Amino acid sequence: MRRGGPSVLGIVLAGGAGKRLMPLTADRAKPAVVFGGTYRLVDFVLSNLVNGDILRICVLTQYKSHSLDRHITTTWRMSSLLGNYVTPVPAQQRLGPHWYLGSADAILQSLNLVMDERPDHIAVFGADHVYRMDPRQMLRQHIDGGAGVTVAGIRVPRAESSAFGVIKPGPDGRTVEGFLEKPTDPPGLEDDPDSVLASMGNYVFSTRALVESLFKDAEDENSAHDMGGSILPILTESGEAQLYDFSTNHVPGETARDQGYWRDVGTLDAYYDAHMDLIAERPAFNLYNRDWPVYTHSSQLSPARFNAGGIAGESIVSAGCLIRGQVTRSVLSPGVVVEEGAVVQDSVLHDNVRVGRGAIVRGAILDKHIEVPPGAAVGVNEQRDRELYSVSENGVVALGKGQRVL
Image 1 (cartoon, helix red, strand yellow):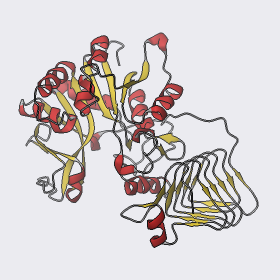
Image 2 (cartoon, one colour):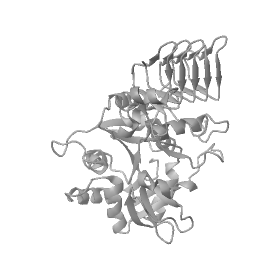
Image 3 (cartoon, rainbow, N blue to C red):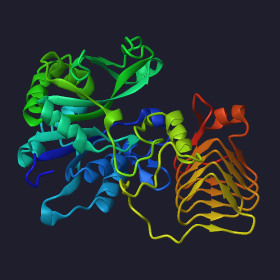
């Protein structure tokens, strides 16, 4: 964002291993996991930044990054004539023979990007959440409030607080008075004791505040070198941290139902539930908002085809799919084949999955290139599924890329 206004550099943190999403992350970084049929998780944050006129973006990668790097370089091509770019930046060991020690260390090791660009402000966003957000509104509050850092917060049930960094707001509702990293028993909000304000992992910094706090954190040998757990407390202590209430953010084309939608899809159950949000009769998250689009790579595939007897209801069916059987309440990525007599229910099928004649797939997530043999069943016998496959706490059966169905 320049054109007479403040210059902003976008930094997307995409280096996490995503262990809680195994087996989907066995072969790729978490931000590269397919979502909603045709998207990758990283597409949501990149679309928000680009739609919000932040057009110079560095994506910091580390673990199993090949799939993510390829997706970014083939999909996210900006105008070099205008000096805009989205570029993956792998760990480079610039400060010594060690990889990133945490998200703050990742930025510290990549400060050459900041020095080259010399922005007024830096938007540091996470790479693996599903949501729509106009970052310009957060930036505007950040500048008007004179904050060193502004952190986006969203209300979540207090019972779920151990999965998030929790923000304690001051009496004015804007100053951050404290920050608790994944607490088990935090105090509730004054107006809603059963809720807390969770950090969304999205921050806007003044460049000065970020650089100074990174160097201060680097001197602390006991630090986890994490943006939320280490950098935010430094700026909270100095009185420079402010809260941005995500519920006040509005994007063009939003509906009353999906305004304020945000999901951390860091577990199999959360990933599965977010897909079920897409296919409801009134979707909790609307993929079809053309006024604030989610961009991704579109393969050159023929349209989906339904043969005689092929049925799909309450489902998303991508290009290149061939449906000869019955599909209900499911999300199908490109190239999925459901043979005659096969039944797919309440499931998420990634690219090129083939469900054989008479097979049953129920309540499952099948990664790319899986073949379900004729007559086989996945998600029908829980005891057998637990012996053979990964099964989540809520009973969702998950098979990794190319895994054999027995």
